[in-house]
Length: 312
Image (cartoon, rainbow, N blue to C red; front, side):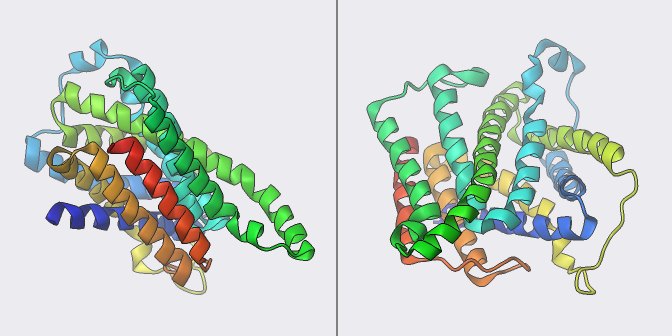
């Protein structure tokens, strides 16, 4: 029961992190600066946990020299994923910012499993897993398009078609970000094996992300100005990185106890729940995007597809 509660909690926390970081981006004026602040806090937290668990942040240099270059790219992919979410949130809302990357994660996850990429175990693409992927796709399409399908009035359809045409590039960006996220997960999983510590692997991934972001920010934003929005900057806009680090640690805790497949499904339920609440009520200064019953059904179909892929 405790594992289920933790899985739901960290799942709900992830869309909250995205909305918080999006608000932070509004004040600092750059998604990269917001990502850097988030990564810095997350890395600091993970460094403390790593010191408590492993007593050291370091590992032999020979490990770095002997391993393939891609093993150290997890942090780079994490930067892409986090920064993309910050950019997508105001364009798509919380729900779509969650589900489009999930579609990308499913697609890339199937490719990683089928071809054994990043030294992952090979899991052939069976008919059952294909059925699950189709259900995910149907659920995603339904959740983003069902309102336009139901609404047959020409004037509304014409107006929403224009919006859809402008929105789809961002949705495709979300799918691509999800593919990078799935790659990061696989890479960090193998890095944990190499370093013999999943916690240290998470810290190394975050640290690489910080280095990348420092270079980007130093190049694009040598001077950073903090802007007040509506005359204030809420305290909670600084804690996104802490939530992200807790999400990583939560997964590290869950997987050995309940298995990867079930952990993914429980966290996904939390993700969807959190994103629905944020869109419905406009939490953390986000725009309200009321959810319809048909969209909830579509999301349940998507969750069913994930269950088929990850558990059955």
